[in-house]
Length: 59
Image (tube, rainbow, N blue to C red; front, side):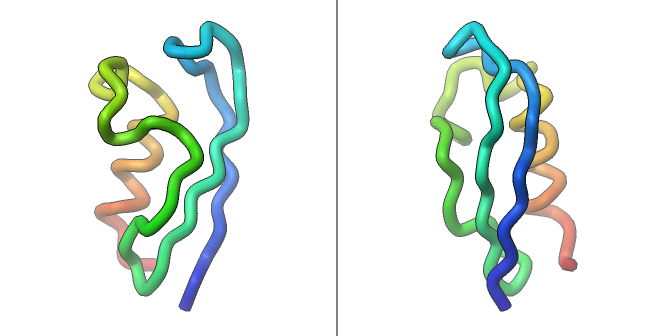
């Protein structure tokens, strides 16, 4: 089953707040409309933290 999530937060790469769309399919993160996981700011990014939580959750 495909599920779409909208995550809001501050993006250091863009230096502004934004909404990131994430698509999960059968519990696996399949699409993200930001640079995650390759972004250099991902380790400290609150948006990336939520994306990592999506990857580990099996909803």
